Image 1 (cartoon, rainbow, N blue to C red):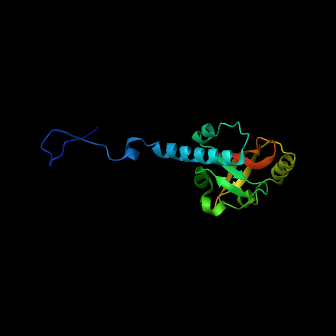
Image 2: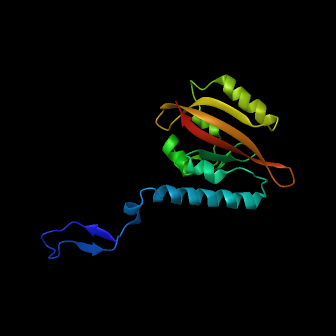
Image 3: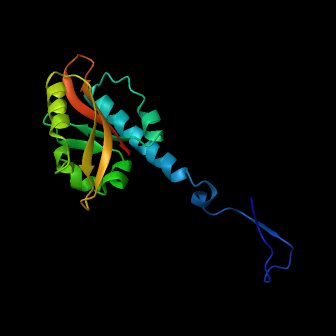
Length: 166
C-alpha cells in the first residue's frame, strides 16, 4: 500500500489506499514490457524460420541494443522498439525498406564496402558508421551484422545489433 500524506479533507493523520498505477510504482516497467514484447517477437520469428540462433537477444535488449532483422534482399522485416528512439523513424515507416535509407553524406564508403563484402561471404560484420535520424541529424552507430541460418544450415535472414556511440 502507498501512504499519502495527510490532507485537509481527510480526518485521519494518513490514509492507506491501493496504488493505482504500476507505471508510478516501477519506472522500469515500460522497458521490461518492451523487452518482453521484443523477445517474444524474436522467439516467434526464430520458431517460424527455424533459426539456429545462439544469441542472447534478451540480454541485448535489456542493455539497450537495437535489433534489426532483414530478409535476404536486405529489406527490414522487424525492428526492436528502441529503434524509434534512436532513429526517430516509427516501425511502420521502416518495414520493407533497406537500412541504407539511414545513411548519408558522412557515412563512410569504406564501412559500406566492408559490410557488402562480409555479408556476401556470409561473415559477421563489426563496424562503426555514421547514420542519420529522420530529422537529418547524424549519429555514430556501432553495428554488428550476423547472417542467420536455419537448423538445416540455410541462410534465411540477417540481424543487425546496433548501439549509438560517441
